[in-house]
Length: 399
Ligand SMILES: [Fe+2]
Image (tube, rainbow, N blue to C red; front, side, top):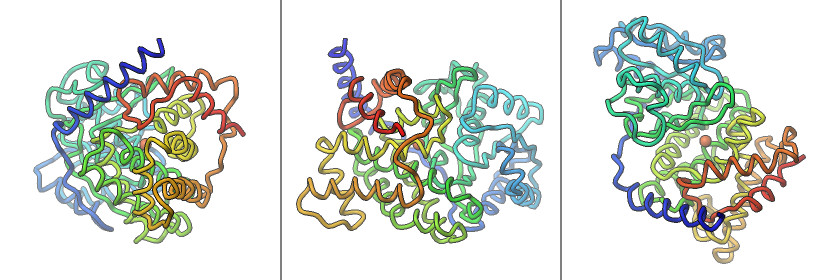
């Protein structure tokens, strides 16, 4: 059985390597810098949109971030309705609720304001709005036939990169199992990377989301499906994150560091959207589904261990990343080691501990099994992992 799994994994990855460069290469029109959200609102008006649905969460409404955007929409002559019911790790319920609001007000476009959760929920709403098919018929790879409704993305965290990806993740309401929607048509129409919306983020969210972006960039750079183009995106993101995440963590009002992190998150999204992610995400998703661990936090916990696990297989890649962040070393092995140490130090410098308090030893076999099931066919990891190896790795996270 294990031999069969391993064989099908290798065949699936070989096919992905062959076909992923042929995927349509999309990216959103991107506006960058403080004030760019206002420019995006003007562009929505200029595009002839009269009625739009804002998809967001209640915390951002309470913080007053959404009010700034609605004022800009009013100036641009766009009538808006706000759906603020999205919660972390959105479920089918949130998508259905937003969609019924969208139909009720006859919206012509969606504006996602927030982190990955509102953006992912809005992507699936946009697809359902034009495809008139049940949500489950759209899940998976390339299942979206008609171009979704225009989607404008205003990220308020720097990490998920959803504004630059062709993927959305929506969970099942009871089991919290993740459902993936992957299609080039899900790429947002336009995105504004406006750091002035990010200065209020508390340090622990800055840390977790920044480490999510780093995980995207590193998993993409070490993926078997990487290309010259994704490598440029990934290395730019890695460099920007090492330079700016500690600054944004220490001083949330450092707009220059926040802008650099917003850009890094976007580039990391452009990279992993084309290559996919690997075991760090598979395990982090399962920790999130089991204990509600925030996505970036879980990634940060797992990333150094996966880099250790695949250190030999990705030695050259990790040594190159050491060069990217200016680390000296004696040959590839030494440089790769120094890069892994630097990742661990960065994570610790932004207050993320080595272990997860919620993690229970008895849950480890099932977490390992579910993570490997997620990763098995499509995650282009540099080294294949089996059940015993996954359990041994997760064991290291026990407090
Ligand atoms: Fe992620």
